[in-house]
Length: 174
Image (cartoon, rainbow, N blue to C red):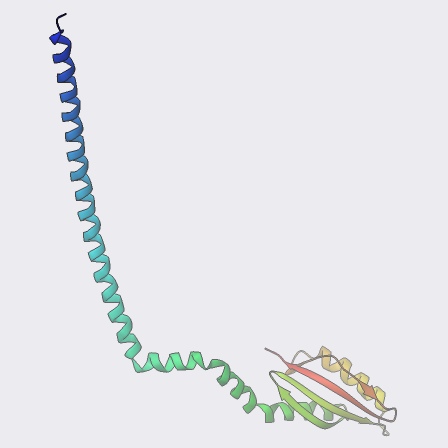
């Protein structure tokens, strides 16, 4: 039986063309990937140069004395605020005494901590009014005073009749 060579030649030529087309496709794809890689490497080099420039600028800023001072201020701002508030304690005492004097009340104890003022107040009966009336007038008027330095917090306790003792807590207005 003779072999049909015509079929064999047609099949060989089709395979050859497919292989050749695939080879060109791989070569073109490889060239495109190489060009893309070259573009990315160039872009990365540009970005690295920009990062180096920015790092140099940042280091120069860190060496600036004004920036160092500001950095120290920011890192210690809570301490500075606390010291500022503590330096105002004489003003707070004056304000509390002035307010209590308006209502014929006496200051017997004062404490300041973190924006809060705690005081012990004495109210005694005299010819102007009874002690509890002084306390009621003080509480009513101070809470409604919008120009006061403090906000009146809760009253934790009150004792006595003709001589009343009570705690008052003030919170510094912000």
